[in-house]
Length: 420
Ligand SMILES: [Zn+2]
Image 1 (cartoon, helix red, strand yellow):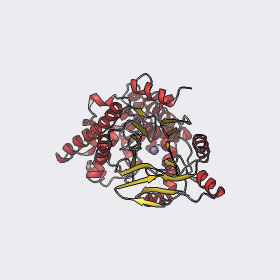
Image 2 (cartoon, rainbow, N blue to C red; image 1 turned 60 degrees about the vertical axis):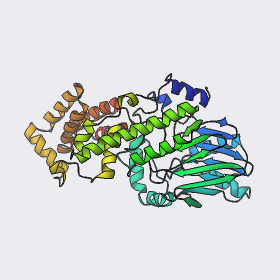
Image 3 (cartoon, rainbow, N blue to C red; image 1 turned 90 degrees about the horizontal axis):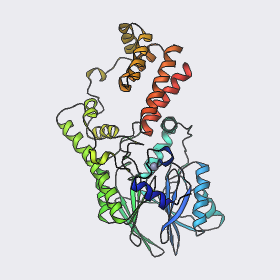
Image 4 (cartoon, rainbow, N blue to C red; image 1 turned 180 degrees about the horizontal axis):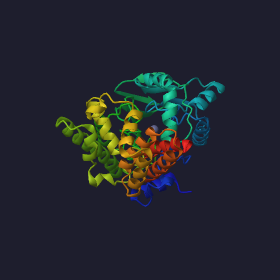
């Protein structure tokens, strides 16, 4: 099996691509290796960095909430170093980054090491409380997003110490700089180790178009994200360790990855702002805005997880209201009533779904799916309509590049397949 460093270099050179499912940044390689003296990187579904110090180990991120993931990442970290866990730093409160400590805390209790310090931005605590309140919703949307049945965890381990904008610490002689930057979340932080010039970005870099648009989750912050990336670049890191995916190695490569991603976000922000100020509704904006062509195909900015179209929507939501801009959608009729009316005009739900299939055949998946939804809503009990709707959404899912789109369209296909 190639080392993480070898894979990282192949990815950087474009010899392998993240659009290949085998090299998607979320693939749990379950490998760990030292990337600088005393600094090791674990590549799972989400990543972890372990830093050796004379007072014990520092973890940056802790891995995912699932017990299987817990054991895997714990074993790898322990194969790198048996030292007591001194400090854990959450880059943000997501359940794939801040919920991995249980085996370490159990070990600390068994060995009478005392509990480690757990550091997180002050926003991590309200996030974890909100996650407990919305566990049902989050189980539903994560099951849909990843097409894996999710039982949302409700047992967070809260930070023992929080910070606001910045925190500098020294643990066992190792300097650690922590900086807050809103971006994927409002509680995000990134970490810089001046001795080795290693940067740990959390999810502010994930080898994919930034997850600044997620259609099912709370507000993300594109322009603040870009600012954070520029602050990171100003420190001239030698190695970038991301929250998902593989490292970026070498000062020039790291600078390029960070500034390209900042440029990408700033461009989407500027374009959205211009149309917003011109009074263009968000439903029209999404068809007019695109990332700069010279960035759209960068290997670390492919829309394999989130998409620029969704980022535009989130920038709009940050600056404007929730209204789509379509007058009837301000106070809409129930969707089944709309669908029945449209179906009656079209000659019935069968006619609608047949036309949807024709449009799908011709490659207009966006239009095909509108008709498929109307047909499905107009005839919720029709086996035939839902059989065709399932086929259309399966095709849509297969034609889409991103996890977000595949998740939602795949769920629509399964919903109809269960009826058809
Ligand atoms: Zn993540």
